[in-house]
Image (cartoon, rainbow, N blue to C red):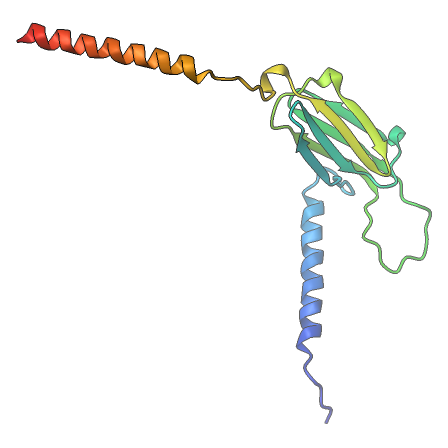
Amino acid sequence: MTIRYWQPFREIETLRRQLDQVFDEITHSQSDAPGTWGPAIEMQDDGDNLILKAQLPSVEGKDLDVQVTRDSVAIAGDRPQPPEQNYLHSEFRYGKFQRVINLPVAVQNDQVSANLTNGILTLTLPKVTEARNRVFKVNLGELSEAATQTLEASTDSVMENSSSQS
């Protein structure tokens, strides 16, 4: 009779790997075409501009198609697979990719600047004038004088109404 020892941590690790594979398959099956993927992005609000960064390792500018509208950015391209090698394990994504990012505010799509450095695509998207944060100074001295005059006028009208009713 063989004694087999139960190794709960090994079984938990196997279960974790199987669940990761299931979620990877679900994620990939939700894309438009087989083999497509979307790059990771990061967006910042810089006051007058939105700064959008996309991770595109080993993708050249000639392999990219970037389209900007007033309210969205579409990034598409192709990351070619290197020649066949003896990989034991690889989680790199290859093939066609696409990503559409909806913008929180309207941008001036004809004034966008782009930079691709070290696999990071950086788009500077200037906001339309109406969407920029504008600061208006409120003069409290004028506001308090106007409020005082309005209060005095309303008090006078209440007194006139009460004297006419008696």
